[in-house]
Length: 319
Image (cartoon, rainbow, N blue to C red; front, side, top):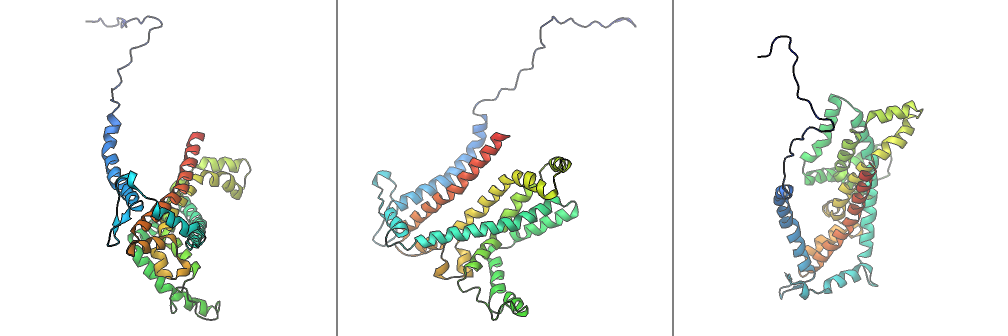
């Protein structure tokens, strides 16, 4: 036993000698790939195989009943239907070129309207606190609880000849007579695209604006910047990744959208790429052409997605 008052002896440590580190937990190189294997297999089944099926149909042929006949061997593929679609789009007798141009115009305008409407809404919700923010978020998520079909039917009820839109315009004497909003008007299709996809623009913008460090805005204020100038120089540049994400999220479904055009217009003067693809799927003998349209649409959608990934990678590297 150590006597009371005796000094406590501690082992002397030789100079320059560091304490031994605890051995790190060993993880095999296959640890994380093993966890990711089920998701990889799932994606391979639900994406790679259907994509290869589309390729086999696009470069295949049809049987005697004009049904699509996939050719699974790539060395037997033919580009007959691919060249046929190319001539329909850019050839001398092309008639699908205006459809693709119209689709780009409609999607571009609808995306810009979504941005200009969604950004102030997301900015306001991000600046709210407490119950007001929760109430706004609930109101923002309510459209996701309602079927897209029901929302389009409600839009039809508002825009028909005796609908509330025409009644209000006539009551305010803004138009001399009832407007046929559902009779092949491009503005109706564009507003329908905006109405159906604008929540997907608001959510990523809100999620990013809500995480912006308020100390940056306070620093800009201390340096003499006005609220508008601090928004232009601080908030807007910092929200660029969210703007790109929201643009990609709303742009991708718009390019393949055919249902909105059918319900709100139904006119060949407002036909979009999705309508051409839908008609090719439903018509007999057009299966390979429909598969080619799918491949072209996928290539078109890869462009904004590649730009988004490139911009995101540059932003992460800059940090």
